[in-house]
Length: 189
Length: 191
Image 1 (cartoon, rainbow over the protein chains, first blue to last red):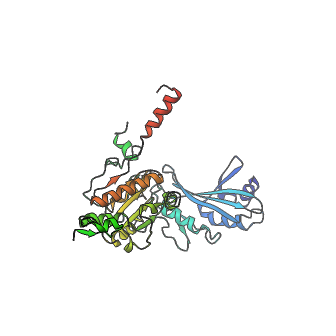
Image 2 (tube, each protein chain N blue to C red):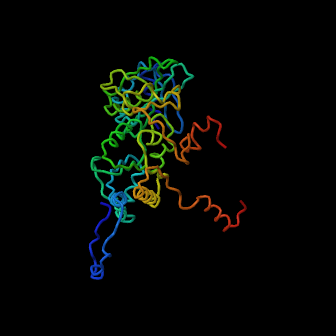
Image 3 (cartoon, chains in turn red, green):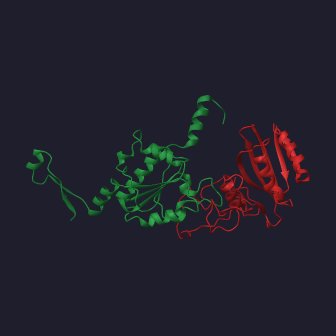
């Protein structure tokens, strides 16, 4: 469907395009993180691509890979009716130096998407006008969608009450026989 | 104190000397007055709100129980309805609203999420509002049916009338497993 766009990108940027994949007429292009902004700018401005809409931007954590995170952006052209998935890989194994250039100057709608990705995945967007947490509270430490964030770690803002007994359906596991804690404890049947 | 004069309603009552009086204890009277004048503060955060609207609509009509008047200031409310999931970020807000309410005050956890966090077993959800504020009635269900909510409300009214501050849980009117048993018997399916 948008194989033309992939060919244009390959022709224009050459070795910056690391990898391309097509599945169910759904094209994916992986580019160098350093060329992220230039590729995005080209995709919007070139009349053959004309990606006016940035549909989604998110991050993926692959803890075993060396550039650990993938930044995934979905683009769509209303006029030419094609779509493209653009990816870039950033960050080392410890999750440090996960920095990529912000695309907010190109699509202003990317603002909150990048804040969300920063909030939950810890990828920093260079040049973002207001890079703060968007869903979690400022006191929160760490980035919960990273695979090394402990699954049952909570960071309450107010101290919990003490010295109250739970009622019968709500045992120590809050009555959740399907809960993660119950499975870990080995008490499920 | 301790006894009230009931206004005479018929000529027969007026003619009697001892009739026309009703005696009661003050706390029983106050309990009776409180249980039918629960001003609610709806703290509606999630999908249970739909069932909450249904409950207040004419079809189910919560005003039959004298608990329909919403007050959007916690200072005027008696009963805090916590309807829906409470996230860790909302927890200080909920605690503050509870603290702003004047005594006597009651808290009702509407639905599984408010009662114990439900299936949100993660970094962002508060696993039950009783972690931060004392809770009087728990209504399980995802969301609970309006009938279950009224069971909870009547349970609360009963507790208020008796001056009982221990928490209560709404039990299902019928064991859900019983439906399966009946269905199998009807269709003659071996268990």
